[in-house]
Picture 1: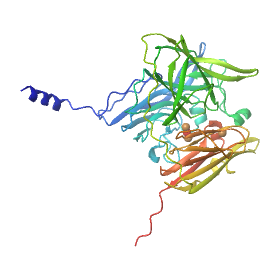
Picture 2 (picture 1 turned 120 degrees about the vertical axis):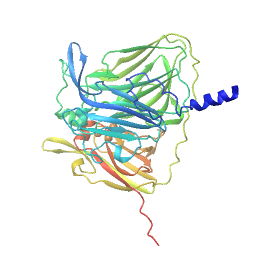
Picture 3 (picture 1 turned 45 degrees about the vertical axis):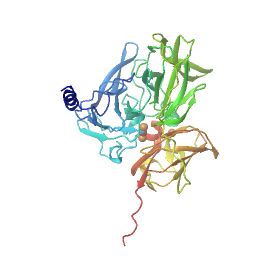
Length: 458
Ligand code: C2O
Ligand code: CU
């Protein structure tokens, strides 16, 4: 009888396919309205909103669900993400899922979908093939739409990740504001044509003031960092804690490495850290190190007071897959990044043409490939490839140790980089500079990844 009851109990409450999603500290998570366990469905809208960054003066933002940054969208690896998106802006927009190797049709760029007009709804649906930290943003007039606040985080959780005391997402941004809280002009004046739009106000998770919290002594935390600025490479300093980089862009690193000194966070890139407070620390702080006329200044963005029940303080073993072995290259692309003056303004180019004049580069899917990207200009360019991961092989002809599968690489002025990919994801993909002013002024191109031709029929 007892056995039978147990059997009944079993039958009436089937094992859930997925555990509850872990909490992520930072941007509020979007509500999952799906009744199907295999699907996470969230509703998102872009519209005009307002926030206060300058004392007493509201700033007119554009925001997803009225929040800057927009809500966190998260799911377990294996789950499908459905985003029912409504455009309540006065201009067309799209959403690009930065770093995710998803179906080309869902990439959210005008080359693969009609721009979503004001008042229209579009449903994005995809099943991320990789776990990790990602983000999303518009891919139309991005220099204004992203700066005004349209940007959000996306996390695909590993089912086999080790337990941590806290999982935090830090969105690093800067905005360029007038003294009365308005955005400075979006007309891209001369300095911004050259270096992009640098903000005068740093934001952490949409806050212009110091963000505070507590952290347990001996806590083991996962911190996800993303730089969503238009133009500023972020340099971060961590005090009172030891940290290891455990993931770069999407993927966990087989060999995490210790953070020593300042941590460079290029635009668009994500870095996941394992953070453990030092034994004698009373505070853990995260600072943004910015250049000044006389050197650098450290601006604290996050301060956690060490208190509470001690954690175990033990480094975790992260479930990283080995990095793919780089095969001899069978196809090669050379991309030269440069600029010319056109009618008194800077036009940014790839291989001598601006985006509006460019033809897609055509490559074959699933072939070991290399790309040599030469920065022939003074300013740096954070170069981003949609839909694929790559590995960094060389800089200026010399092998480098910058491990990980990436979607973004920073290329300093007058240097070059050699990267390797196998173009595993077919479709029409963008490759561009993530300084949004450079991109708008021409530094965007398309790579058409074609499935291999079928052998002739017998
Ligand atoms: Cu983060 Cu083409 O974009
Ligand atoms: Cu650039």
